[in-house]
Length: 121
Image (cartoon, rainbow, N blue to C red):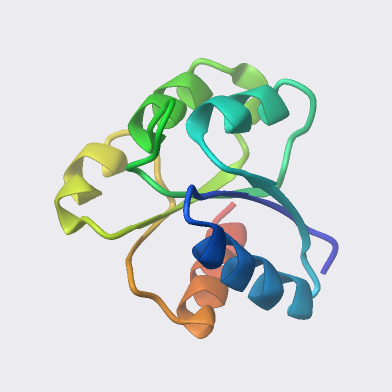
């Protein structure tokens, strides 16, 4: 596959489960525990896909999405939002989200969302 995925998730167990599923599927995985850490990572690296939680400490996913919109180098990065709060769907869709999943999700659902986002690129 050869694609890189940045997981931005404050819950360590969720991050670990996502990493395991993605690595088994052949993805290279990087992790950030909050939005601030994700933006720091994105200053130096450009993943193919960002899997993004919305409610996190430091900087939430909504702020991260807005900042990504302002970074021309990241315009081709696919974004998959994975959140426990369906009410964020409308807000995130106006910010160029490729896929939106509501927790709890299965590994298969996550992989399908990433694959769909990459195909739509």
